[in-house]
Image (cartoon, rainbow over all chains, first blue to last red; front, side, top):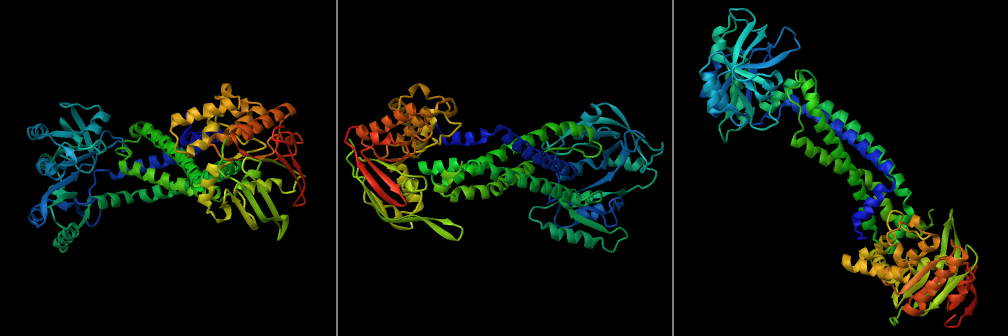
Length: 386
Length: 235
């Protein structure tokens, strides 16, 4: 029997339960779509990409290589705290070209230094790799996907980097590493570049990328300019970018994922806005008399308007929870099925925060008209409504 | 008995409604004095302006001209917010079709106006139980309006109207949707509120039986009070 303002809210929400449930489902569907698309984008981009860390690649294109000799020049450059190099093996698990697998030849020490805050390379892992020339450190996601354990022998095929035995490369799993955060992509393995470089029959001393950790206080833009100017007159010109810019450019080779996400989400939300606004207008119209009664009883216009706003906000928040909950439930299933296309599917805190903001803004936009109408509704005419 | 002065004064009040580009006058230069503790029944044909008078007194409609004051307070000088606050404290409305919140129980409907008061939840609960007892519906506290008869719903409507202890009750055809027996019970209840609790009641009605309980009856026709009937203090 204890009446509270929230009971009035509940009364309105449950007045036509089917309509409320359908609206929540409708809103939930839009946020499910948003969550899914955002997860794809995050999966492609990788949440570990940092704006302050730099990537040096060939100016010609992502598949071109740079001389390993640049390493010394980069190390000597002012503003560079640490530098490492990465060569992509472009390996396949089997002969199936769809069964591609991330495998990078790196110098473990420098790699661990540059990416220290992204991956967890324990001293034991580093020692295990140092002790085994053909050893590889496998990311947790990849190890779980392939069912690999420390000590397992694995065989990969690389059509780009042949060795003396042909296209097949044999490794043993020296250890399994984790990301610093659960959302960090660990769907790849690392092998020793010294072994890789020695075993290559062609393309020795070439790398795909250099990773650079700028010294604290260094202006990244100035450093980017210095690096590219340093190699501007060499046979292999460089393009230096922040890690996030590099990932963005990498993705745009396939599609402008970001624009696709924004466009599809915008269309979904615009549709939801129209549907919900229309429904709310009808819902408020059929309550005109009750709104009039509330005002007669002494509830001020802003209070009645607040009820309408709160009602819409609750609908959107329930839809948001449903949509993002469904996304979180579906992602593990989708992640497994699409692991060869998208390394890792996950809802980032940023995507969740964006969804909350979108829900609040849409709720305000949707409720603005009906709420203002409730605010301005003349009591005498409201009471005449049947 | 309440002795606070809540005399209602309508002085040279005019009201019209828009109809297309023109305005239809409801009444012009209407003057009315309702003393504190009165129980006035206003009768008259449909469209004569009876409900409009209630709306003007209750501050939910505005006069085109003239002044309306209650207990010396001129309603026309109050802003919307002040008027809403004043209405919550001083006026209780009873409607023909009850206008109860359909998904709130009888007790919750009665408690609704008390949300605007500084009463604690416990005090509100006690007040609601007392009022439900007065209207004879203590045993229906948890029932939804749809589970009550018309007469019972109107009792809940009256209970809600008096919940915040207003000085004045404005009743718009309170028996218009009820059978004779229920209508008489409602009229008796209103009479009790007037006689025993000192509420000033203004009731618009088509019900001739209203004259039985009202202290005064006025007949409104074509914007003028055309007949008056003074009733004995206790009918």
